[in-house]
Length: 378
Image (cartoon, rainbow, N blue to C red):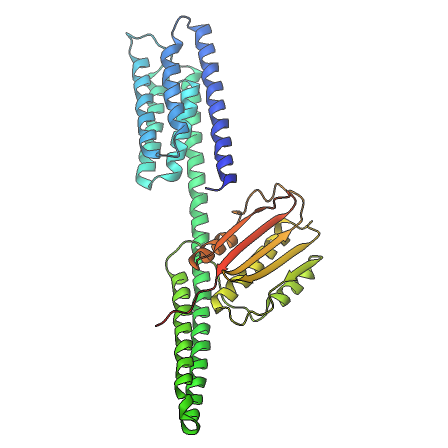
């Protein structure tokens, strides 16, 4: 979990906890004022348990929802017993916690479990409405429970649509990878064919150099195997793999096209990319393409963009940085599938990708490192 996500989770849990405490305090005050004595204690304790389970919903939704339903069922049962004079339950605070539990379960659990928990919650509230005293408390609980089921179903449908969209993206990307694999194989086989034809000529004219030519053919075959292995790894069933087909244009042309839509784009490259494996070259291109696309979408007010590609003994580094002012539209880099897919692809190739605000606070940076594989013997 990234730092922004962690802060969002802390903030949401804190806000929900404050809401629960306020509801419990309001319920205690109302009961103490109307019923008097310690009549508020059972309801307050039950509400604390259910609300606490609701706060723990992300860790295990099944048992927290089941335990919460059991607590609600017991409080309803005690409230219906004529020998026990307790306020009608569940109270508003417990109803709020129950709504969160049910909504979370309906969103995340399997259809059978989600339906069982949501149906049980609605059944308990229906029993309270039918058998309990006529008051606004059961009506509030019923409304909260229905709201939880509705919200859970809505979020479940949204999550399903998101997963379906991600699946479509992965299928399209794997088609692109298959085309790249074809291009890589064709490139290396063409080179090996030309070298083998040259070896036949050398064998007739200068037999002493045949061994050197055969070694070059072997090296070309080894390079082809390494490249194929790395691309095939990307084609395996991993989530959010990014497209990687090599483009007909280079980085210079890509940056020039971007410069027509965005002012002051600077490109810095090592100059010689001929010895890079095809999968590294195409990945560098796609990272720069995705980062520049994100600048157009999310940072139209950036005055300048720097695209820096470097090469050292460890591999290739790519950084795309802009100087756009801070904007709420870019809270973190998980807003779309592009950079998520890029991260999966880069990590499969043995590299790393990071994206986020620049240390100065102004602008956004996408930085990637990609190792250049060493040649392995067959």
